[in-house]
Structure formats: C-alpha cells, structure tokens
Image 1 (cartoon, rainbow over the protein chains, first blue to last red):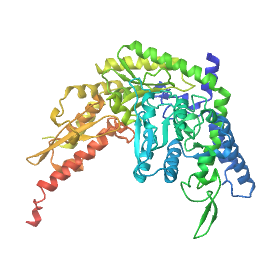
Image 2: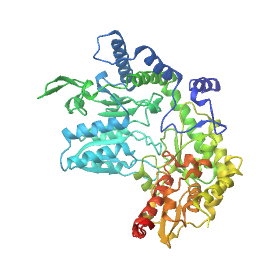
Image 3: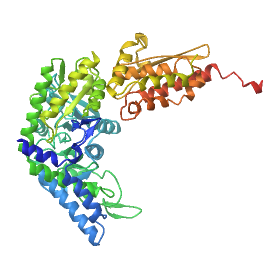
Image 4: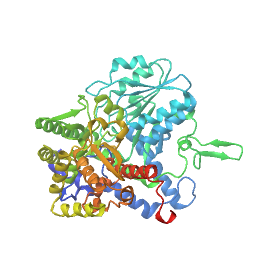
Length: 407
Length: 150
C-alpha cells in the first residue's frame, strides 16, 4: 500500500485525527475494538434520521424499508463468509452472545451426562465460560487441547480428545492474546472424521482473514461487528441449516414465535427462531457498511499490509533487546503481545497512554493462557488497516523513554 | 499529630509543584521504588486485592486506638499511589479512616487511577482499608459508650 492509499484509508476514520494528552493519538487496541469508517457512522445517522422503525411486523412504509435494509445486511454477511443460505446467518449482540447461544441451545439437545466438550488452551474467556456453564448443567466435562511455547495447538494431542464422548469442538480461529492463526481446516477435518461438530470463534479473524464457511465446512462460526469496523452491539452466528433446525430456541419472546397460546407456543423458522425481541437494527445496517468497507479495501490488501506492520513491529521490538514477545507462531495476525523487560505491563501501559498511545495491558480475558506462560499479563499492540509504521516508531520511542523512567 | 486533612493538603501542595505529568509520574515512580511497604511474608492470597491489571496486598493492625496499614503492589506506579494512600490513612483512629473523603486523589490529578476501567485494585484497596477500620471499630471499640450514656 502506498502513502496515498494509506492517507485515503486514514481519512475515512475521523476519530484518528485527534490529540491525546498533547500527542497525536496512536490507536493500537484494535483487537479490543476497531474504529469506525465514516460510511459506517453515516449509515447510523441515516438510519435514525430516515428509516428508524421496528422490523418484520409493521405494514407501514418505514417498517418495510427498515426490514428490507435489515435483510440486505443478512445477505451481505452471507456473501462475506460465503454461507449457503441467508437464514444460516443469525444476528446476535456479539461473539459472546453467539457462543452462549450455541453452548446453551446445542447442549440442551446434544450434550448428556458423561459427554465432553473440547476447547483449546488459548481460548478467550468467552469460549470457555459458556461451555463450563453448559457442562455443569449437563453433567458433562470440559477438556482442553494443550498448546506449545510458541502459542500453537499441539496437533498430536487433538486426536486423543476426539473420542466417542466428545460432542462438540470449540476453538478460536485467531488467538486474541497471541495472534496465532490456528489451522482450523485441519481441526475441522479431524473432528468431522468422528462426526463431531465444530464451532469456530472468529472474533479475531474476520477483519484480517477471508473466511469461507463452506470451504472450511465448520458447523458454527461466530464473530462481532465491532471488531470489524462495524458498530458495537451487533454480532453474527453462522450455523449450518441442518444443525440450527435441530436446536431448540435460546431466548423466548417476540419475533421468534409462529403462534402463541397460554398452553403452547410454536416457533418461527430460521433465522427468526433465534432472534427473539427487537434487534439492534441500526447497528445491523452499520455492519453492512463495514462489510462494504472491507470488500472495497479487499482482504488481499488487508492481509498484505497488516502482515507488513506485524513484521515491522516485531523486528523493531526485538531490536530493543529487552522485549519478550509472547506468541511466536509463524502464522499470526497483526497482534503483538509482549513484556517490556522487568517493567510491569500496567506501568508501561499507563505511560504509553500519557504519550497518546492506546494499547491493552493485562490478561486479555485469557487467564488460563497467562497461567500457561506463568505471567500475570502482557502489553498488547494490535494493528488495523489504518495503522502506520510511523505509529510503530512512536511506540518504540515511547518504550525507550519508559525504560529510562523505570530504571 | 497531623490529621487526615492535614496530610491530604500536604500531598496536594507537593503535587502542585509538578508542572507536567512526566514530573508527577516520575515522583510516583520514586515513591513506588523507595518504600518497603509490606513484609514479604504477607504478600499472600490472604492479603491480596486482585485487580485486573496490577495486584495490591494490604495488611492492617490495630494498636492503641489506631489502625496501622502496610501494603504493596507488583506495579510501580500503583505502588507509588499505594504509598500515598498509606500516608493519608495509616496510624489514624478508625473513625478518621472511615470518614476520610479521599478527595485529594482527584485534586492531584490521579482520579483516572481510581476509575473502574483501570481495575488496578486501588478502588478496592481504599474500600478494604475502610472495611478494616470498620471491623476494628466493631471489635475493639463497641463497648465504648458515648459520654452521655454513662
């Protein structure tokens, strides 16, 4: 990407053009949430200025317009991840809700006492806790695929856990803490050889990597809008039609019903069966604009440029000589977790903030992973398409200053 | 002996000397590095206040009508702030600790460290210090009747 293209991209993100504590904002907390391009912000304004109305039930003009726009977003998501049918796309509030939906509903039907659920050692709490709750309710057991020091799944351990008792494999596509890109295609093939369905937590992948759910053949794929340039408050659960049809509803309420009497309720068909209540329509419309932004930019360019940032940042940090990088898998997205020598991540993060640089510090909602590395937390810099090498240089200069302050 | 209010104003005047954040944080780092704040043997889970980011240990003792605090943190900036909290609250009667408004933290521009987003255990630490004072008051001072009831 040349300077003109980069400038063009940055201009689409008005929030970037500001000072924090007297310094230009450097936003490196993209794994927590990305900033929003103008077309997404404008779509929210447009929705509440011209379209706002409850969907699917109204016969009036605005309701029909809003309903059409909402269903166009569903089609845009279907196209983005190449799902077979639009009704395999369920709108949720985010990845967390998507996983909770599956953990709760799938487990009611398919998880029984003595069964197991298999996850990996690098999961976000959102792909651990819902399964722990489900296992407790169903008297099942949670089992964990170990990882190695580089932060990769140990494939030779996977097969052992995929036995008759395993009813679902739930793994992350990309680790939010380490950046590791897991070979999910191989995991899915291994699980399917035993007819075990697979849920993929795609929260950290969707803004970086082209996802094709049919090629992957995963049974569920979950992601959040706000980590892919869309508004907060909307997420996606992709599920294969067959398995979604077999699952009971998650929440009861409006929209998800066909008929209700005081003695019996019949449920609506997909996708509405899983979309109880009024959804966040404006945010769903914003998601479509975020998809447009990604598709206009192109995954090819995104992957190439972010990989460039990752390697530049990694090299610059290594050159400092005292940085320990946590997560050194060869296949990574643009996430660098590190320990700045003996300086506590919180101390480093506090001073970086004073210098206008936004990073995340702490355990990143992956406490078991921190236990594995025997550390209490890291500093995490995560890059998006609008970040620059100059910003990485600013972080490096800030780290050198911090080293002097704490010595 | 200085009251909580005296110490709080003293801290505020010290921090007024700093013209930019860098000096202020350098001072906090200095405070954090300088003090042995708690005996190592007490840095255990029993005394731990778990924050999301940095951890704080607090221990309290009651002696001759006053509460004596010792504390520590694994992060230096947090340690610096911890040392200010101790200076403000330690060696004081229970009621003075319970009633301390802690407003000086805002006045010296460290409010952000007490916001829930920081999750560094400082908020919980202040709460814990006040709880200790309340508990000691209930345990050692509950028999003391006000003068008029005697």
